[in-house]
Length: 203
Image (tube, rainbow, N blue to C red; front, side, top):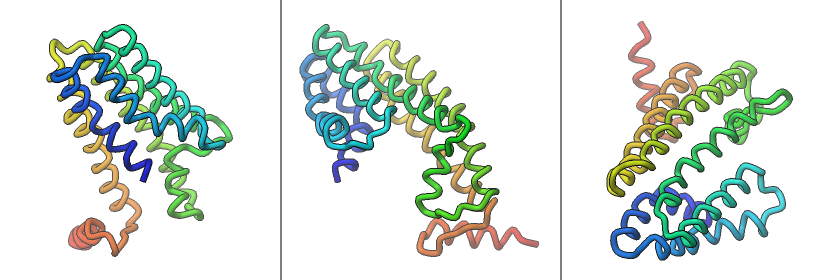
């Protein structure tokens, strides 16, 4: 439940900042976000002995930006937070490609299928590299958004536009992967639809 709450807060971050800057001020908005994200900070720093370094960097980096906003009163600290998070994801994926380490996409895949075939594992490595390119594009988007002329434009770029960009790639890759490996979960209505489409394309 805690992770779901954290995910919701991160997803709503642009909206929270927009409303906070509209009805409060930078310092109070930063303090509000610090309270909302405090659970994640406490759980990652003190509650887990197996927390990965990238997650710790994400938590500490976000906390430092919020502290900077609360101390200086500058909303640029709040605007730069999505860029910092995107960069951390990039370096986390890149680090997983080092020799002797399983790519992060392969780790996710093995959670559902421990006996992952070699072909699928090779695809996971290529996909992890593709995600690096996707994160570069997203980082460029949210970095440019930080210098948007007004906070509403910033919120739209780092919110709906960025989410549509990432979600669009995620959806396209999911569909491609199902058709490529012909692996469909009949309990999933989307997979059932894709299976029927796959069969209709067979001559």
